[in-house]
Image (cartoon, rainbow over all chains, first blue to last red; front, side, top):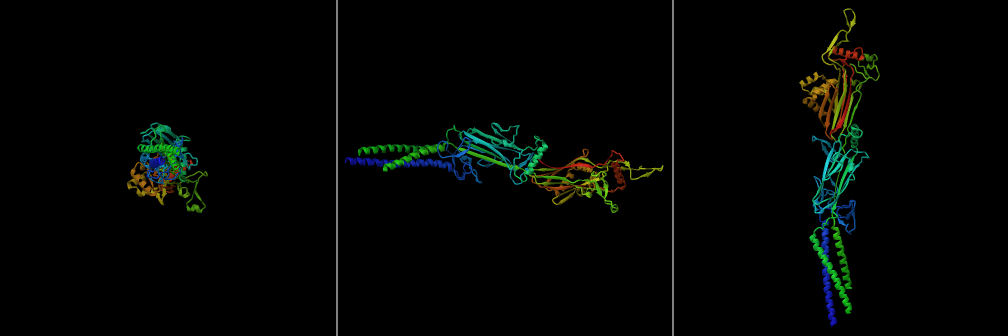
Length: 322
Length: 316
């Protein structure tokens, strides 16, 4: 009788433990799903279609990876501290740019007309140019950008950190010609930063525009700060260097005549990449929710451990009773 | 068995908890933002071709006199030095097909200025004054013969008259005719006083007229309107001339992407006979004698020359 009562008591305990375990499992599942839902909301909550920062990836996918020491994005498996969700402030194929207000880093690059996304068409060059008398002296026949002797333009863009955290950033410039068959084009360029001054060229010196190519700036931009960059380029109307004015005029004319049949094109690409300063506290999204669901997950974990302990002790006791 | 299953569930839960914690802490660690701006441009097209072809003068000119030709005469004017170009009364550029033809073609993407500059100008001129008339051999009272008669020129005599014909868009503009057709009577009288004729004018007369036209908006508008009918897309016609320096400059501006496609033909003629036959025969003869070296006179110039440069230049 005592044995039967003891057995019933033990079964009752086991049933209670099972109920407890089920409860804990439910709590655990809830907490984990909520935590993951946080992650899901963060990465796919925007209504635009995202493209990966990894070049060549398809729209609508989210690539997870890390940024290497060269500033390149590397797709990685999800492990360790290098795993980072990539905020995709980009659209493509004529879609409206995703608002950078969604950018959790608070980092943005913009000019007087637009906020940059990825592969943003910016206005370093123009379709037409006016002289000092406001007369159009250069105008593209096809409506595409052109340059010619005597043309010049200034392009200003701003790197801004409107977020809470200090950021590391990388700015690179790529400049190259296309279809020129090695012919030199007398375009000069320089780049300056405010605050900071010229980073390529100087107030007096106009280097060849290709000297912008390969420029790289690794810097920090504190919260609330912004840097204004000014890219100037020009094709001097008259050049007295080298073999003299007449020879230089002849060379410019040759280029203009070649341009009738061939597009002698200059490309300038400015890339920026920013991430939270390594020494900064980690921005973890909505802390209140994370604490809540994290707490539940933690409690469930503790419960599981306790249960494990109780069940082990129960089984041991049963074995001893047997 | 039941307990083992529970254990397995627990183990899975434990693993899930650990993984989720790592994953969440890791994935929320950093944000990376990338922005990229790109632009490109090409060299603007030029492709303007300018040419000046032809040789305005020749070293011999075919005869027009029927009797002379019938008698086997082929050329009525032939230079004593082969290849050395000459002019004489009755010769013209059309006669030898030696018109000076300039052309410009192209549709540049930059504003362009077409300029024609003349410099180093010399002309056959006998300045105003009184000269020996070599057309009359006069017998003196002592029975000897000599050139004792004289003739007087009230103004400089430049016998070679130039004209320009501009062609474009299938239309033709004869400059001398256009001036006669468009200038108000008072202005035309002024131009004629400067040497304009229906056949054109001498180089220096042209320079004088250009100077007057350049300084008169009314003249300039007439010329620009007439030019605009032939050469579409052009504007801002400008003229400059300096008679003392022997230079002139005409320019015409074209906006980007305006087609530049016109030709101009410069022609000249030295009339065999002119209105006042006796006077101008005497003047022509005097010039011929100076050219032959039998008469020396600093007031007579027997060389005609000019350097003509046509240019298309980008406007800044």
